[in-house]
Image (cartoon, rainbow, N blue to C red):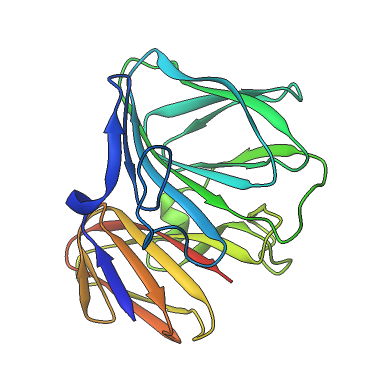
Length: 232
């Protein structure tokens, strides 16, 4: 089953400095049909104005993955970590027993990103943060694990959950396949471009909530950049 969630049906709020769209219930947006998909709890599509960002605030017991689409985001946290994650790259924060962090767009142009929250397999644990570049050329035509709770995904950033976040770029007409498994949940969003997923058209920034589909066949209608979560 593939449920298309058109971009114009997403919840959200425009705070001036932040224009946020929510694929799942978040903050003041509540839809009982869009609470979660398995362990996947949040997928936000954020645009952050230059010179603004999120001041220090706390998190606990959540795996938070940030995929930067344009611009860059600068992270600073209560553990003393500080880093800048640029377009195409990924950062992961395992909130564990608790962490405070701030994220700012220190550039001169808007930053756009996906922020994805996945519930951990077990609560607690020491909080941590990490970031890594993922060149788009390395994931041309094939899915690459960007963040993963599976030891076999050795190049991915580690997360503490039975899930993985994957990326792929496709040229128009190209197809990539992914063995999801009928007992798994998938959520897919094209950061850019239009695609079909097992014959269902998904346009840029639309969501596709996927369940009971053993295999996914993704074909690009035009050049596309795609992010997929595979979760229990």
